[in-house]
Length: 305
Image 1 (cartoon, rainbow, N blue to C red):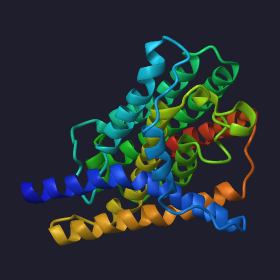
Image 2 (spheres, one colour):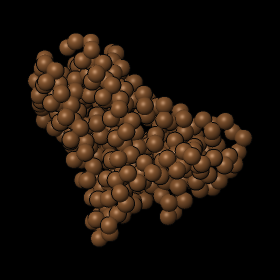
Image 3 (cartoon, helix red, strand yellow):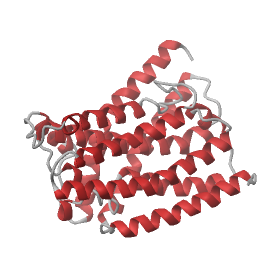
Image 4 (spheres, rainbow, N blue to C red):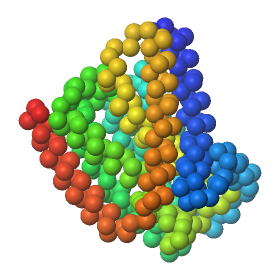
């Protein structure tokens, strides 16, 4: 594929990752409203909310630099990880072992959220950070194991080579199913939005945030959710379409990724609308059991199944 075509795919991919996440959240809000027999906001409502927040000054209740920098560092992490993903078959930032980088960089969004909550003297913020920490400590080992299964199956830690070299096995099918659960938890959708539960801890780590800084944090969270969903959608498409040798086929795969990403969001919204928020101890138990299941899947993969 010519360099100009790769640059074009990268440019379109960057536009999508910057513009689409708030639209997806707006779509989810609209679907939840319809399921609850409400009209719901327009699809642009999340963008309107972000624009309003970006235009407002932020109240800083502490002199801690972490409080000010955490939203921007979280946004930088989310942007960086989105650049590691394939758009069509083109990855804007591609290098060896980038699956490890993907794992750690997207984890930093949660880390900065935790640090932001701990940087202020607020019980709700500290409680939200503690909850986020518990979720991270129980779901990230599971995700690491599942990524390990993908890498072992494909024989590489490169995201591009994993998508190109995955071959169907029993362990891979189970990995896909458990990975869907793990990425859903990592995204913080209901019933797993325990750290920011507005009715209980008034936003958790984001309790003290307002104005521009709050808008940046929200945007980082939307980008993180988009990156995790695009990664999963790419796993559903790229390994099974065969070698992509023409620009037309690459464009078709890109379009399929795009439409599947949009198609999955109403399903996510339906799950959110029909489930009540779980307690943190329930989530920890669920993630622990899923972790043991991940270990079994890893053993099955090593056995060659």
